[in-house]
Picture 1 (cartoon, rainbow, N blue to C red):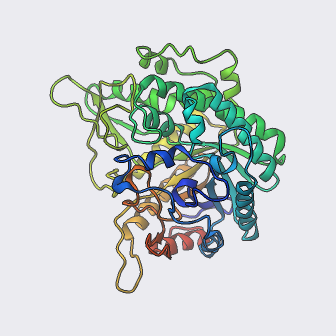
Picture 2: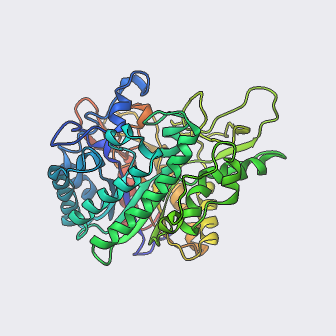
Picture 3: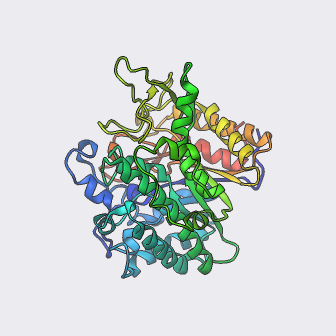
Length: 461
């Protein structure tokens, strides 16, 4: 169970979840500032105003990464910290913060992996229509160029988007994420304009960053387990919505026919303009894969209450426009604190399928981890054996996939720190480092020490 020397071990975070300092040094408001301050949208009224205060504790957190022996760190850049109004004037103080972050990583021999968008859209752009309009994709490309010009001589890997599925469907269809809209057409418009933003941003980055930089996008590709006679039909429908609408245009240059068919009652996709698909299909050096759990699906037979246990939060609106007849059935235990099932075989199946479908496309697991209700023991330690076991089993799945010849080049554990878990506020802890939200003290958990030993020894033994 040995990992080769070139396999990259890292951890990941996102700007709104850890930075805090939302009103400092020229940062503008994001949709998550607005959403979290709207009563009833986030558990217990929690916000990211302070979060982990990473903005003020940068050196402390960088030292933690070095102590754990991380080889790479995947962070996201807050668009409203760089371009507060989404377009136009650039905030130098924001660029300076990320420049210090990148320099601090390099000084500690940690590879910087920068994600340009992890959901914190400038509120000013949402006021103009957000991801439902083409102008947001164009503004994103301009923002990408600004960041590329500032940091492009030092950043190793550029990731355009994190989980556009969540941005589009949870933000604009089910409404459980910012901006909290519940409009199926808006969600599908957002799908396309996020795809377009990816392509336009890569085109801009390539003109300004160092020639050996790597380019990427991160998708939360879903694994659906069909149940019963109708299970395969159900799986095909939701796969077209979850995976096909991103993999198709990004890697194949077309939206799958089934994606268009499933959504035909909502839109004719006339917002896709001539030349868009060529812009979207840009070569990437690595495809980032985020994975946590699987879903069980079948078609609803029209009797009883439609089951919607998709794991993405309760809403009266669907996150699956055009697939209202698909049931998401409860999954078998064990589950994490998020209610997500633990199924490392799902990660193995997903990576093998991607390797077979795109044999020349290198892969990277860019998020994988688990929330558990951690307890601080009398000795001050956090004995999170469940998290350690979760990560061990999923790393073993990655090794199995590599042994089958699939080109998986690294693993980023989610997350480095306990943080603001979106609509769940501070109730869920994903970190391998505990954050005391009263004192903001950091305490590495047992899982952090174990992960450090894996990185050091390149082995699960």
